[in-house]
Image (cartoon, rainbow, N blue to C red; front, side):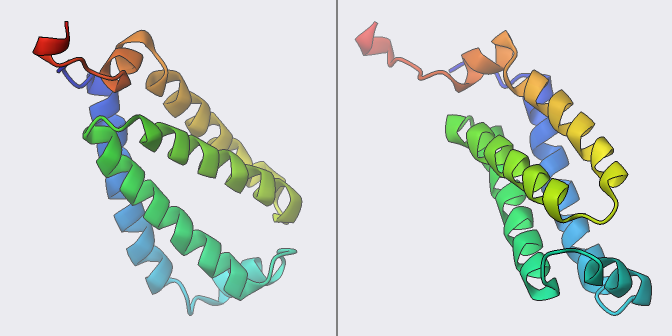
Length: 131
């Protein structure tokens, strides 16, 4: 079994921690008038925004855990959901400039998840008897 690259370890923990922090902060900000006002300006309904947000946080949490365990599907799941979320946000967000940090973060994460060391970590491992 190949060793987990430091970048994959950091990204996995980053996804886990940020998903948990985002879950708590989202819950605490549900009654914030500024949050309500910004969400009301979106082309997407507020209940749908909360549903997509919760699903995204669950996906980030699962992906972070699965990345640390070496599951190749985790990076596809995370990147696929992130791209989907950015496309939806591009069409529904009232403040498009707020998407720039997310695009940059996604590009950095994608770069590190597909480097040669990460590819080796996520590649199928042969059993000693199969070699």
